[in-house]
Length: 101
Image 1 (cartoon, rainbow, N blue to C red):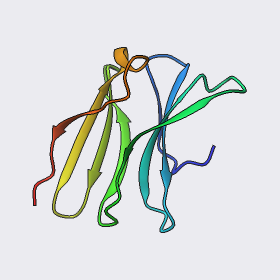
Image 2 (spheres, rainbow, N blue to C red):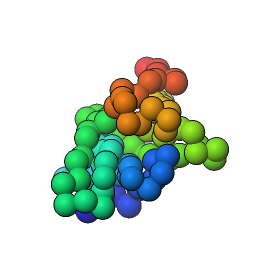
Image 3 (cartoon, one colour):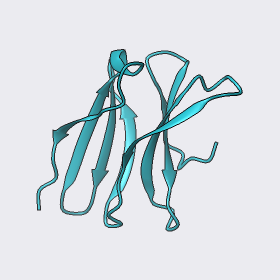
Image 4 (cartoon, rainbow, N blue to C red):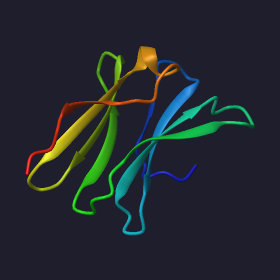
């Protein structure tokens, strides 16, 4: 698994979230890997930050109920979330705080 080093478990040990890097070694893509133990694991692209002024990060809430995707520059940031109890039914992340210019 080629990652940026950022990875978190989903609700249980069947789902893994991880970041990949671009050519400049900037974390920019968040993937969800389901059934990671099987030979037929599937990776789903959840979010992608194309602006090279922004760096992205994935983390899980302390109570384990949410996966967060945060992207930030020196001047602004943006945060998305996915409830872990819905990770098997949806891949649509909701925006908590949109970036401001």
